Length: 377
Image 1 (cartoon, rainbow, N blue to C red):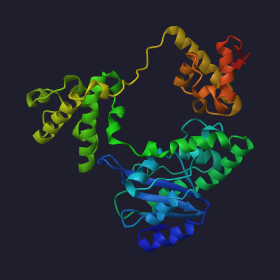
Image 2: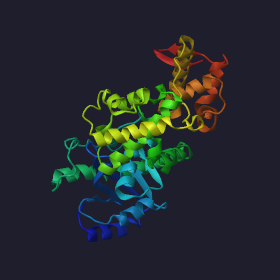
Image 3: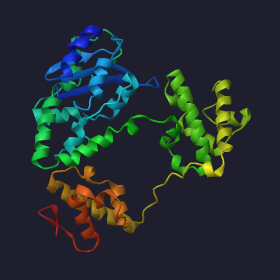
Image 4: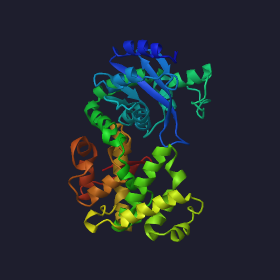
């Protein structure tokens, strides 16, 4: 069902608002813009599937009210980009989100399993992949495109129902729900332009004074890219920003010596210089905190982490969990360092794996190989 008029959307949303669970997916483009362009929103409400055209419909507020309603579960697969696109394109934050990719990792499926693979595994259906690189902004959309788009939500309600039942049976729903709240936390979706420097590649290589410059240059870049709606890298790449922070040019000749800025318009160059000067004028007490670099591990530490990873894999396989959902390498390193405040030291992660890892580090647990498989002694 393709909805391209306001009346059609209003009617659909009136019915969908009475459903306790809806499945959602989006199609968007972001290669040539700062803000992702929302091109299509697919919703499955009680088996009634709609492909909603946000390009043709002027007012998406009826749909936004459903997304914001905490009493309606919104089922996504790999939701992080969808949540950002919905926020940027519709100005709303989705509440009460269930991510089938995340839930799958608590049921023994591999970490970050794709939607097609999950549909095949759970529903026994092989989905077509022909429209994966479609330009969803072009109109009209043909029937094949719409079927492909609708398939992205066609099976999500069944998967959600199956996963919720299995999580309850395994007494793991209470493990999953806080993780769902974390990935849909508004602070992860609303990005402050003043914090853009924290996402700068190789920012950890900069001093605190250089980070003050990076903060100003990245803030300028975010605002300029947003005002022109172009990708930030079209203005200044991350590599050039790092070089600006190291050389701190305050004159046009010095700025022009940096490769990548030779053809930048003079007006933009002056704005960059002004941002550099603002960073240089920052008082030491106002410098950003240093960004922690991962220290190069010793062979001994690497060996211990490898042994801990082996235990983690054995435990995860036994419990039917993806190892990565229990702990990552940083979590293992934190436990190895003696920290008692990490994720492996509390809650279900401590019960499932933390205790075994603590015994390993205390010399009370070992590993052996039996019939080609690693087992815990």
